[in-house]
Length: 188
Image (cartoon, rainbow, N blue to C red):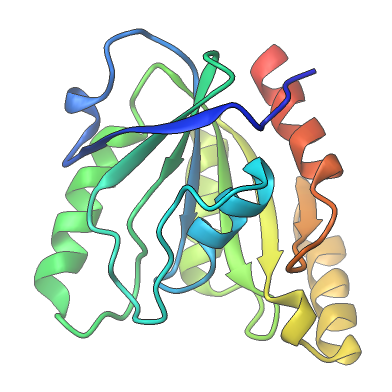
């Protein structure tokens, strides 16, 4: 099994053509701005490697982190609202459209805040990944800030609509299950 503790930042890229040329597999983290992508990466690898900000929209490039010298975790820019508007939304769309056709992409983790549930953007992303035959996992973030009723509602929402792996992320939580899911995706 992958250790997830030997990790380092490699490069930030405006699109996947600038990615490292070693052909290692990739797992991408996708979600709205400020949903907790960088925080989740830091939790998975048990160290602060990905920069997280309180201000939405700070990540503007694809950030590559090499794990155990065997695969990359890729922190993608957030989609949706940012303070600098639609020009960046178009740039995000163009960047990610080409990225998803990257032959090294093995899986996508689609993150959503458990308090807001799955929105149209997240559903569209999950459907798109499925269409491209890319393994996908829905990750509910900020569960430690949610009411139990919000978490229960999210669980019902998922059970009734989706056929995929789901992970509920808590700060200082146990990432063993998510590490195992990522390992399985990389083995397939």
